[in-house]
Length: 159
Image (cartoon, rainbow, N blue to C red):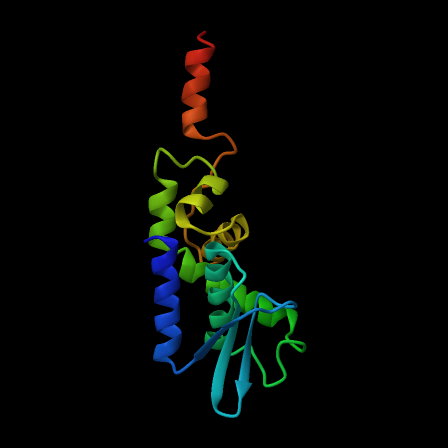
């Protein structure tokens, strides 16, 4: 699934919960979630790249689904609330099944390549890895050097 499809899926998920999305130019924040009486609003900065929109949208939905936003948010959001929202975003953007599939690919040799393949940033990959390991799930550690580089090095410097 490409980034655009993931974004559409997240908007659809939020809309199914009655969340209203407002895309606007924001100088201070990339995104934020607010409760306004019985309305849930998520603001997304329209100046973001597609990848950043995906990450911010998932993070703000993470606040909603982990119940870590208050009527006074975002200035009063606690560090633990941010952690929960980031974990929710990571495991929804990098599902365990997709993570394992990408890590078992011979063309993905490190976490940076896994992030690129899954359309997320390296922080999201690391957070997903840490989350799955805390749950007792095995996640192969990617090497710094990719499989392709290792094969190329052997042909360049035969023994």
